Amino acid sequence: MTEEQLQFIKGLGKSVARGVPQLATGLIDLAALPLTMSGISKPEDIFMSTEYLTKKGFLPPPQTGLLNQGTELATSMLNPTSAAKTGLVGLAGVLNKTSKLPTKDIVKFDPRFDSRVREQVKLKNIKPKIQSNKTQENIPEISLADLEGRPFITSMSDRTRADGLLTGIGDVNFNNPIDMMGGQGYMFRFPNQVWASGQNPINALDINAKTIKSVTGQDPLYIPFRMSPTGGDFSHMTGETMLAYADASMPLKQKKKADKLIKNLIPEWKGMSDPKSIKQYSDAPDKTRKKIQQELDKQFRDVGGLGKGEARIAVSDPNQLTAQDGGILNIGEIFSDRYPLFKPTQHRSYPYVLQGKGIGQVKNDKTIFELLDLDKRVQLDKKGNPTGKIITINKKNPTSDDLRSLQMKPYSGILTEELLKKLGY
Image (tube, rainbow, N blue to C red; front, side, top):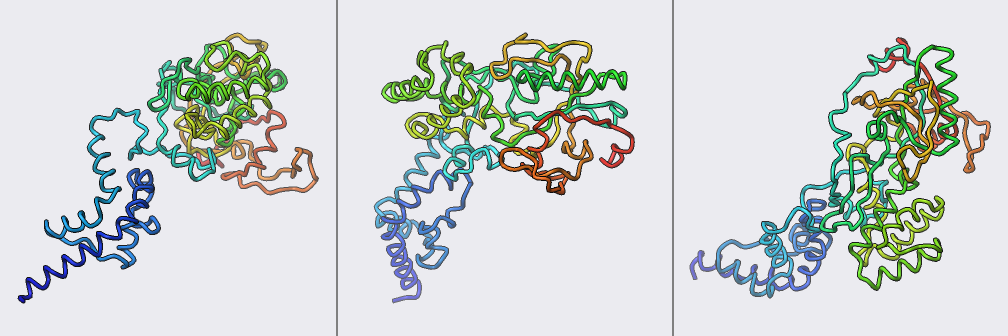
């Protein structure tokens, strides 16, 4: 037997040795496809997969040559992952952009949008459909240095978007689109309106603004700071998106089951397919809205519904998916000589409005603690009551507890020359 023939037989034996185990490893490869094809994980990093066992030396490497490759294929009885992957690659050219198949156009986001590992795989591929209102386009970019000497007031802002109608997600088109109102972008969405909130927060901002105007002679700036990724759960938009998705995607049996559950919480509930239900949901107390979100997530996200994390991503400003807590973005101006309005343009979550206008957007990532020049705070207990203990704040990287200390009332300051120099201007 020649050396060439000997090497051929050895290669053929390795092809058989590699092909037979793939009857089992192929199923593992198949289960891992959403991770490996989307680039989230490498094939060799999936425990007990074909590539993993090859890397560890438990399987011989693939053999070259048509006969060796054919032998491996035949003895593996067609590795199901190879078949699936071949089929997916073939389909890729005819599938539209709303396909649920993983793509390499992966969404980057703060993992706190949904800490559950399996849900994060879904979030990486979510594709909201927005019918733009163009109000968030061409916002002027400004520098804090241009505002030297101006007084300002701050309060918290969720990360929800304000750029139009959410008409669907992926290949699911909503029967009733959801109006995106913000969030930071609210001040550029409606003329002469700088902020919307509840009655008490708006009254506190208004009193503060009028006091500042009487002392300084200037209308104060309004500089909201960013909340955590879950801060938008209070907004109507998160739950409405879950309901709209369920209405368009869930089987009738599951929809009836969900409607029955919601009717126990909202007795006058008309059903998720009835447009009147939008108002019924938004008029419900915060506790009820969050309970509905929780149940839709828990009971229906795997039977045609939408998970809470997916809804959070869908209604969030894409520019704030990875942004820092406590960071500033949009800057407006409060019209101190005017009084708050009640439902001038209906924001279903926040009926009171502070009059004013949006000025521009800052691009450099500063936190509200840097603007307020605060590096210490009083510790709060779980109920928000002060304990008397003094806590040091990392102004460039504040914690959620640090930010919670600012949520009790609006804070104010002045963009002095000294402060701007500390900020690096």
